[in-house]
Image 1: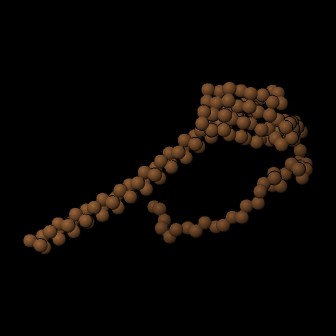
Image 2 (image 1 turned 120 degrees about the horizontal axis):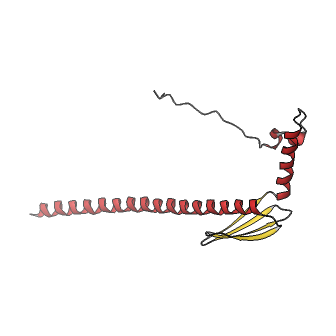
Image 3 (image 1 turned 120 degrees about the vertical axis):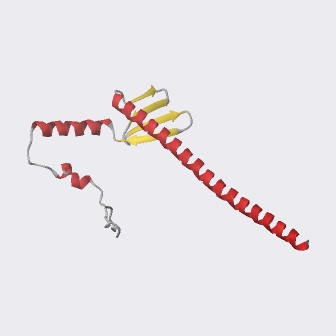
Length: 148
């Protein structure tokens, strides 16, 4: 009779331990899912804010102004730092700094001039390789398994 009580207590202790471990694993999994969902929602809102900023930049005719969208409010200002765009959404505030409109117009004028006068002369400022950042590349190791 004494031994049967020990066995029942051991099985009960084992069941409680396994339930505790399972609940911890479930809690970690659910917290990770919640974090991924929050990141997704923030990225989605950031993308919408960037789209509103780009649309405002395209439609900008003055040095500074304000536009209202159904997802938020955009204010923009063109100064020496660049084209600064502030986007207020329901939950967050975003700020984007883009090149000034004058630089964009000058680049557009250069491309129009190049199309009109196709020549082989390229100045140092116009070479694209000078503008690109240097990247150190590492070779990718190929796996020994090949896909058939």
